[in-house]
Length: 474
Image 1 (tube, rainbow, N blue to C red):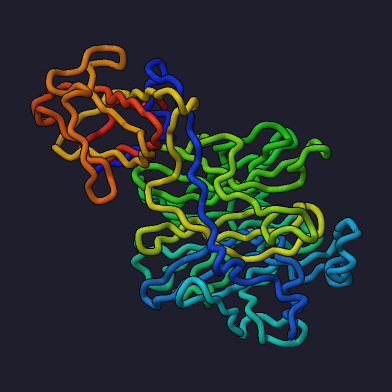
Image 2 (cartoon, one colour; image 1 turned 180 degrees about the horizontal axis):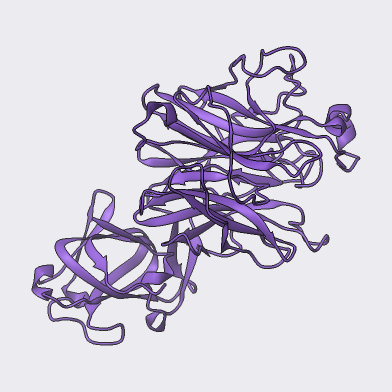
């Protein structure tokens, strides 16, 4: 079965569309449990190494062998300004960090995805003790993933990081682990050294089996998302641009990705600067992006957050009212769980950061609906080949609303005999709208029809079934 999402402009025939807009589905926050945990610098007893999470760049992995959720996150363990400024004092001051801040990677785990512990790992000494959950010092923006295809048990877990020693430019490095806790000695990249002051998100690409790294570079003063690739996880290619925003006000700070249905879904943290008078100045929103090939991403719905920031402003606002940095989703039952780090203040100012989560129904990333709710919207696709008899629409239809379907020889042509809107038989089956016609799809033979939808007071999220696009516009 193939799936095609309605935000994918490559399947659309724009000449045949009218009165439609694309909106992201809002990830639903877990208000019953959020935040799952916070910085513990001011806790009793305190974790003195959790002085500032900052962006934290979370990596959440479910380990089926151990039946446990693992979280790897970046934090600042030494920061003279944050250490010496109480919460009460922060409200009336600006955060101006001094040279010498020290970053590290820390670890937490959970059996149920809700209740998290920060175990004493005994790996790294901090203030004369190894009783902490620090996993690796000087590791900035670390990306960790569990490689289910790896045949060498010692390399089941893989890590890419920017080693960030105070007073140096640092360098990129990788490491391997059998258990996700104990890591091999770091191996420096032989070539290239991108700025990579971001979430260095690594994964194995299902399209070609190669390792890919989503990182960040700078061009003309702007933050740009870029990709590197490797066949051995040690030798990486030169970074190539894959996504940029729109000037200073919309810059790509980081972008974890999730692979599904032959498409890459990106969770871009968009940084806003350039105009101190705007409401979102120095804040970070999470937007939905996508690509069918890793050479270029696009925005599903530009400028519209996928995870809404909380209400208010520092220091009295919601824990996530200032900045949001997401992890790639984890499947939990019939939903996707998007863990994220939420900060309660501006990006470059004082803020305290917390770990939280939100949920999304599978395949409901974004939707089309009429711009003018009082009139129907028309959606037309590029040609599809139907190789079987299953065809479904993932929809939500309001009371009094409707969705009609027909198959045409071209977007503005005639419906095939037996495949007009009046020939369509639409039935609810297993949470989707099953589409059948007066004739079987096999009667189309070698014809590749365009699908034309008429949408009234309804949302359409995806097409799926025994059909395959014949001509994408990429």
